[in-house]
Amino acid sequence: MENKIHAHVPYGRLAEHLDYAIANRINPEVFFPAEALDHLVWEKLASLAGAIHSAGLKTTIHAPFLDLNPGAVDPSIRAASRHRIQQVLQAAELLRPEVIVVHPGYDDLHYGDNRLVWLKNSINFWQEFVPKARELGTVLAVENIYEKEPSTIKALLDAVDDPRFRHCFDVGHWNMFTTVTLKEWFSELGEYIVESHIHDNHGESDEHLPVGEGAINFAQFFPLLNQYAPDAVWTVEAHNTEHLQRAMKNIKNYI
Image (tube, rainbow, N blue to C red; front, side, top):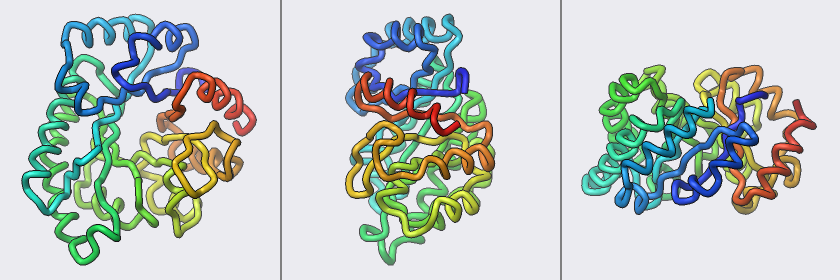
């Protein structure tokens, strides 16, 4: 587990948490909301990135997602989404992330009969950015959000068909929306997983609890993750330092 754990941190709070991350050997997953990207001071980002790399830590990035949809039917929404990903890739030139996590923007209730339209738009969108990901040495990883089962994400991954476009499995989101078992999800998408977001809940809301404090069966999850994606990044999505500390402690009970 050494140097494998990343922890979610919004960019606006990266500076204040950096000493803690370095002291505890925790790699940051830097979340860039839209407003952070619009007001980036590039010299500051370069300084933070330099401190992270000098300490021997790795990085991942979580791209903005609110209001965005790479597969949107409305071309203006796709254009806004494209602009944000372009900004993220510019930040990635400094942070040098192993993975950039992106949201798919799909849900069954919203798209219904437009599923294939969304899929076609999404395929075209991500194919545009794969060459830049390859140039940067990173991987774009599409995260499950509202997906009840893996077929839509698998169709997208199969169509793009590139090792620089893969899957981030969020076990908390899976627990909220799934109609399939963990084993079934890993059987379908395990070979594509390059990162996993790790947090707990009771299946009704996105509580972001420490591992083992909700209803998710982590005794089953961790062996499956190690079996199907032994090299995947583990990102603890805790919303405060206390929860992060409890999560890090609890994870040791399962590995």
